Length: 375
Image 1 (cartoon, rainbow, N blue to C red):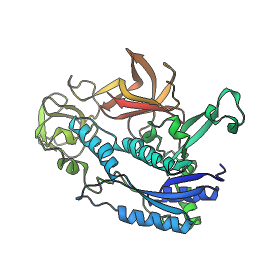
Image 2: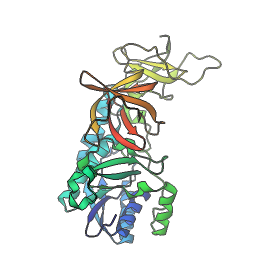
Image 3: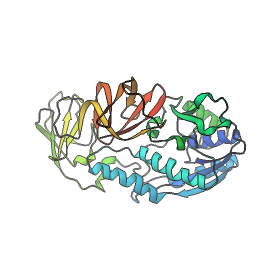
Image 4: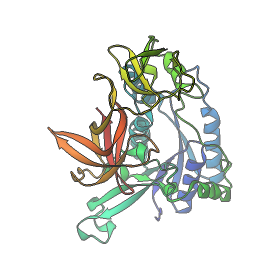
């Protein structure tokens, strides 16, 4: 894409992906401004935001592009952190990365960029955009409003981040650029070296900044009081004790104490949570069909979703074969969409272990159609 006379604000995190994004866009002729977004973190967590900011500034200096700071601490605390803790208190399994993209990167940051004269924003996400021309138009410049954007998985399937962007809309996508989504990660690092960027070999950040290097359970204990309870196996027999049902998520296999063990016991996995009885249900078979009736998570083939967003603005065809994933990097599962009493359900071919609050993201091949939150 020719960026001549176009201004783009890039979310400059101080990592190799955003650094290479800035370099590629400048090479394409865009007027690039790197923007370091300051987010909230509790004072007891070690987070290297100061070092990341310095790296972002140095990259901007190397590339000869402008640098700005954007303080979104208040918005991040309210829309990402408070949301996450609130969801855990309800016994749900939230996805703060999805909320961060929705509210911060493609919400407050996009608003800031447009108000300050930018034509686009760009991030280092491993996704791609495809522009479809409607009604047979061959020249987008004739009527840019009569186009439609598709969000595609990144070329590097091991780094694809479309799962976290299912809430995006046409109005947002038409203002977005994702240049590194066209490359494998190894190629991105090679490009960074060719651009002489100091971040070329910098390790990727892991997880949310406000959690830092602290174990999630230890982190949540500071905000949600512990409440010990029994751990039951799938037969209903008490075999251990947990510290608080809110600290555990479906599929977890660490952080709880099993007191009744056999010689050849296999690892136990959390398969359900009963909030009313403060009971955690585990199994060494990982997936079970016969769980407690009032458990927060059960093994389903049909899952109802809310807060539904279809990126195209139109609901996909009911009954058509699609694919979906419930967790990041889960192998795509065959499914179809069903509507009952005004609700959208994702009907999987195979049973899935599902927790309320998780995101289900629907695909048609490499096209991310959108998704919703498990009810």
